[in-house]
Amino acid sequence: MKIDIPTHFCPQPFNYLHTSVSGRWKPCCRTDWSKKAESFEEWWFEDEDLTQLRSEMLTAPGDMCKKVCQVACTNLENKGVRSYRNDAYDDFVSDSKAIELIKNFKKTGMSVSSKRFITLKPKGLGNFCNLKCFMCPPHLSSSRSTEMIKMSNDTAKIFYKNGIDDLKSSIKINNKQIKKYQELYLEIIELMGNQLRGINLSGGEPTMITGFTPILDKLVESGHSKEMNLFFNSNMTKMSLLENNFADYFKEFKNVDIQASIDNVGKYDEWQRYPTKFNEIEECINFIRAKYPKVYLSANTTWSVLNIEFVEEINNFLKTNNLNLATPFNFVFQPIALSAGNHPNKKALIENYSNSNIFWIKNIINELKNTKFNEMHLYSLGAYAKELDEIRGTNALELWPWLNKYYD
Ligand code: SF4
View 1 (cartoon, helix red, strand yellow):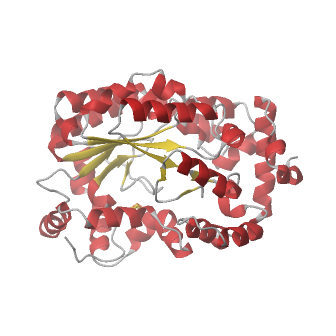
View 2 (cartoon, rainbow, N blue to C red; view 1 turned 90 degrees about the vertical axis):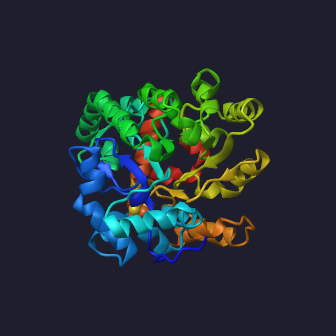
C-alpha cells in the first residue's frame, strides 16, 4: 500500500528500540547521538528530544534531524551513497503496519501500534569476540581490546580522542553493566513483548555473547519468538557456529536472517579480520545451508581503505557462494583514518570501476569520488599496520605494497 510520507522520513525512531553500549538510549543504530533516561518508558513515551525527532520526520527536518542524522545518513546521501535510512524507508512504506503507526503518532504523540512493529536491538550485554578486525572499534571486541591496550597511545588515538584511557573506561563500563541491562531488556519483553517484530543482535560475535542468552530464552519461553525475526551478524568462524549451540535457537523464531561478515578474500580477509581462517567461512555457509535451509544468509562487507581495491574479487566470492551483499553499504567513516575513500590510488580505482558491470558499483565510485583525500591518514594507517604486524607476526606489506611509503 502506498503511503504519502515525506521523502526525508526515517522510521527508525518509531520502530527501533536501541541502547548504546554504555546504556544510553539511541533512536537508531547508525547515529552517535544518544541520551540518558531513567527507564524504557521515560525514553520511548516521554522523551522530548525523541518526540521532536519523530515530529520532524513527519514534517520538515530541523535541529534534531541534524543532530541525529547528519553524519550517519544525510552526508552519505549527499555523496550519492545509499544510506541506512534509504533502506529503512523502503522497507517501512511497503509494510501495511506503517499507516497505523503514523496515524497513532499524529493522534497521541507516541509511537504505539496494536501490531508487532518494534525491533529490539539489545546492546551492553557483552562484547566477546574471537577476532580482532583491524577497523573494529576496540571496545566492541574482547580480543581486540586486550590487544589494543598493549599498543601505543598514538594508535589508540586513531579510535579514541584520549587513546588508551578512553578504551579502558569503555571496557570498565562494558563489564559493569551486563546484569543491569539484562534486567532492562527482560522488563521490556515483559511490557512490550506482543509488539516486538524482531530482535537484532550485534557484537562482538553475537553467537558467543552469553549475555544475550536470558533475553533469547525469555522470547522463546514467552512464545513471542515464534512471531519474531532473529537477525544477527556473524564472523562465520568454526567457534561461532559449528562448535557452538547458538543455532539451536533458529527453529524457535519465525525467520532467521544472518549477515556473514566478509571483508575481503583469502589472506587479505585473514589479515583484516585476524585471526580468522578464510576456509572456515565456506564451511559455515555450507553447514547453515545444509542444516537450516530456511535461514536467509547474506554478506555484510565493511568497506575500508584496505579492501576498496578488491571489489571485483569480493563480488566474485559472493557470487560463487550465492550470497547477496547486504545494503546499505557499510563504509568505515569512523575512524576516518581507515576510510575507503582515502585510498592512495583512488583515481585509478574510480576509472577502473567505471567499466564494471556490478550493479551496486555506483555506491563505491561515489564514496571514492566524494571523500576528501588526506595523506596524513595514510601515515596513521601505516604506523598502525606496522604495530599490528609486530604484535601478530603478520606482514601487511606483502599484501598491500603501497603501504610501504607509510609504514614507519
Ligand atoms: S536517518 Fe539515519 S541517523 Fe537518522 S534516525 Fe534514520 S537511520 Fe538513524
